Length: 271
Image (tube, rainbow, N blue to C red; front, side, top):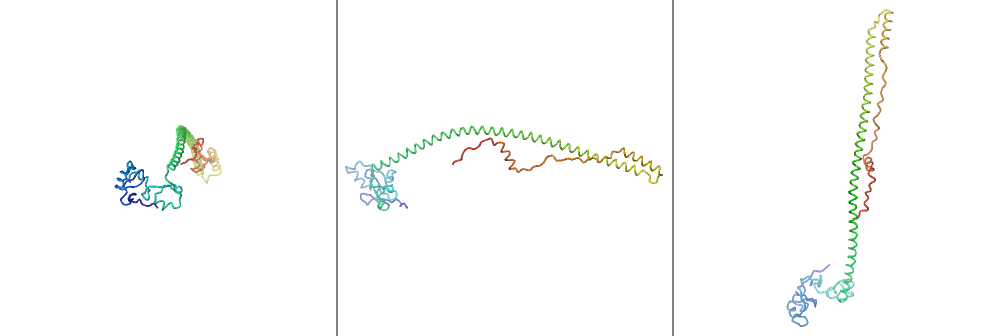
């Protein structure tokens, strides 16, 4: 666990609070030691920054608030004197040299160059994809127009077929109604004729003499021959059509098949 930053004392007198950081010496100074340091001829031009300055913080250990003094090759990290004791025992440590800084700068530059190449490749691919997308948009507009035309045409055909079949059904219905009415009227006419014969038969006296009775029966037969007593043939109405039930999903699929010449495969989707 990373330790909390601590308030560091002056690295010169080890007594007062270190509030200024010498860029050249890479040490913390209290105010008095700072003034003495600047009076010395060798360090009079040294640059100081407040410990809270961003540049100063980069030179101080995040854990111990001490200046970095060595570099650990194994951990690939900078180390202050406390870090060396606590975290880098037995590790190979080296000075923070210009050569090491240059080496890291080369690594960073190479990575940046690699990133730049990848970004350039990404830009080229982006332009390519953008062009493909523009073409796809044009194709989609054309496809939507064609699909609408196809759908409208199918609707017209369906309406025509519905009207045609409806007309056929109405004609069939009318013909069957006429057959049915003709049969019913024929049966009614037959019933009427039979009733007339029954009434005529009742008028023949039962007690007439043989000659009179025979004459009456002959007249009855003559009248009987004048009536149409044929039994009408029962008409065969049949069926309008044979109903074949289909599941809605089947009808839907058959409708979808009308559009199966459109290729809507846009390739594999990637996130």
